[in-house]
Length: 381
Image 1 (cartoon, rainbow, N blue to C red):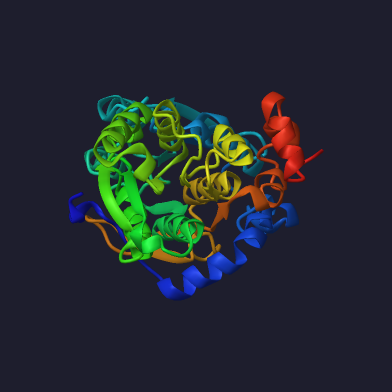
Image 2 (cartoon, rainbow, N blue to C red):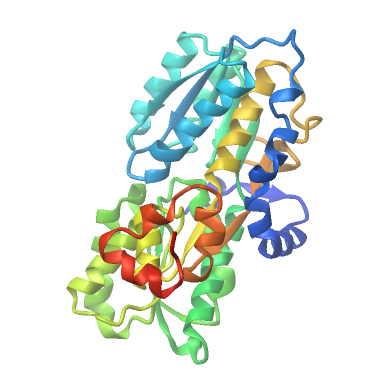
């Protein structure tokens, strides 16, 4: 990937990594303790602030399950809560097309929404639309991926840490002799700036500790593209010789596992993922996927909604402690940022993460053929 598209995060990175890795679980439960509301929450706005707010929400695709199932409804609910049910969200999904997203973006500018929250299909391609929003005096908040152009704020995760968590999990799973283990690496979409950060973090853990025999970038994060890469790796390396697979997200992980199973592999190697999709959590329960990275959808979506409403009400997001960090994009420096904690999800902590946070119930996870596996790891309702 062109290094120009890689954002630089500043804010005591080593300290942050240590803090988030040791405190991830407790941070993910902040919402249950009311901490999210304490930071720019419902009581923060004075009665004379404008509640008649229209938030434009642009999400990139429907292949990533979380966007439709969690991010959109959570942002919508939070905006309504912050505005005494007077605010509304106008939503559009680009379905993987940067041209379609540009049309949606320009329509929202023409409709004079008050603020735009955008998860860019292509962080560079969206920059002209961000510029147009700026000219129209519409604030833009980059969501999940750092868009280029004059964005007003950024809400995401410490994405290099995501890769570190994935890489560290693979090294731990391989144990002694890991340096001789053949690992296939499936990265995400090259135009997504997060891809470079995930890869950088993962390589920081994997380089010199394993033998990376094949590495691929996966266009648009498509599972079918990941499957094609994996079939090539199986053909060239040999299914039985692949000791582990770094998969950057859960959709690709599912495709990887299917290819290995089709190749006759019964003792599956550890496979990583990201996003804690329900299908991935079930695979972890059954032992076919080793881990995923759980990123609290609730904290990220709530943070984006809080920032959006604050910007329209002309409140300082730094003063309200909504943006404690700053990041640099290839085009702009010192962008106020909220970076949400992440945690490695394995069999051992499903109940303490996605179940405790109300993302899934035990009944959601432990249906049908997964019931026995759930019982074996003590995951019962």
